[in-house]
Figure (cartoon, helix red, strand yellow):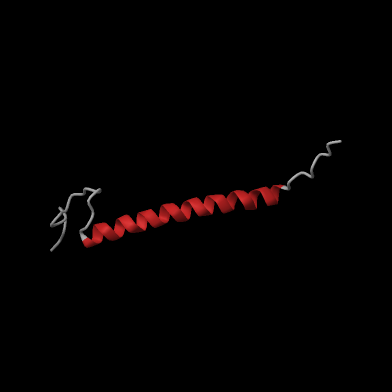
Length: 60
C-alpha cells in the first residue's frame, strides 16, 4: 500500500530554490566578467560600442 511522504518544509524548499538561483547567477556573472575583460583589452568581436574622446560638458 502506498504511503504519502512527509511534506517538505518551506525553509527547506527555499534553501533548495536559492541554491539553484545562486548557481544560475554565478554563471551569468562569469559571462559578464568575461565580456568586460574582452572589451577592456580590445579583443571583443561580438560586442560593439561607441568610443568617445571627450565628454560634451567637461570643464577641461
